[in-house]
Image 1 (cartoon, rainbow, N blue to C red):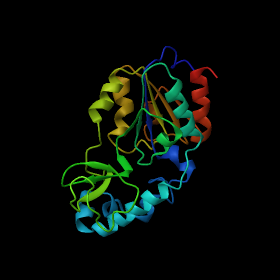
Image 2: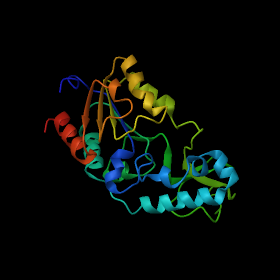
Image 3: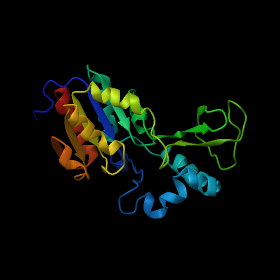
Image 4: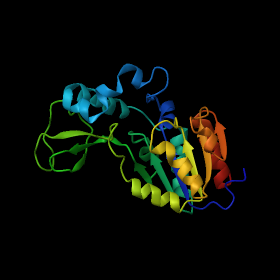
Length: 236
């Protein structure tokens, strides 16, 4: 591969395809979460205002399920890259699980939040949270029963966008792994990178909706193609 020659600063975007082989449902594939629940019913601020019990029950189930899953070879490979890469590296994930961290990665930014946090809408404090929210427990910081999942819903702004764009501006290589290319603003990162002169690589089970924007694309299961790419990048 030629596009990695001279690369030092890398921004990696990961999506649901990285965690699918760990048994975490994707949202857009056949049988995925959006086939079982309408977006409008569980993943918007309006849904939470209309039927908080349904929304909290849905996220309580997801939070419990995620804690039973384990990182797969793709997570492990990216954690190895995080440890061994001597340039700048940022893993921007759309996933709300903690499998990157459990595999050992440290430079991880959760642009869509995380299931294992609760956000208090009264005092704006985010707390580590592994239990349920359905019974409206008090905020550990202020005591108000105002906790909600710390997950970015449709219609809300993803987290730390300025930090992401700053990283893209200093990157030599942008890599998208396991993403559909359908959810913005993340789906637009490849075009932002190209406009900045950054080389781009897609690693995905199949061509994404934005696959044609990438300089190179490799397709196959994440647990196979991600470790292979990391081996190549680190010199075997």
